[in-house]
Length: 255
Image (cartoon, rainbow, N blue to C red; front, side, top):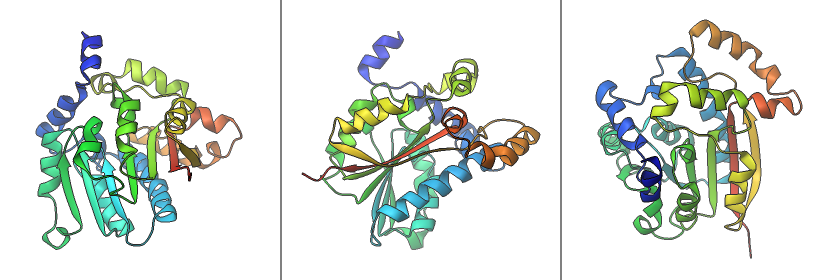
């Protein structure tokens, strides 16, 4: 049954994310009232925003792939001040919630679009964005290579934020956690992701591994992990296997 679903490319997790929004009004990990989720996503946002600001021009246009309920798209809007940002996702319920959150004063700068990532190349003109942000998407996809190829026509600059596929603890969580199984999470080996891009004539310009606080854990545990996190991020070699996030910036090679 799973094999047939993968062949068709219709991820079951899309409906699970829609269900989450119907039940709670947002994604479970964007509920920033949850201490661990707040700490983990804040760190990810800070590092991602640094990359956006470093590698894109002032009048930047951004495509936020996998925008979901829009929480992090609005964060990008506020922190990077783009000329235009488009949130893009397959989860219809989530995108509708995001669109309803747009402040009237920002309507010219931000919009949301429902669509299949595999068809992104059909939905937007070529090279229509200065930079693309793909936050926490690839590990939900049945065919990430096809998705990357589709997005590669839209910009020469792509940022990927993914769970760190080197991390053995993360692999156990993906198998044991009901949440991770329901949302079809499976982290990819970092060199594999890089190869998917280099095969399309992109090159890695910057890559980092950081963060050891999981989205969902008791507050006391998250507090301890946050305390030791700076030290863990600096230990040579070890940090690659115990940090939870893999952040990569790719640029198309100049011919």
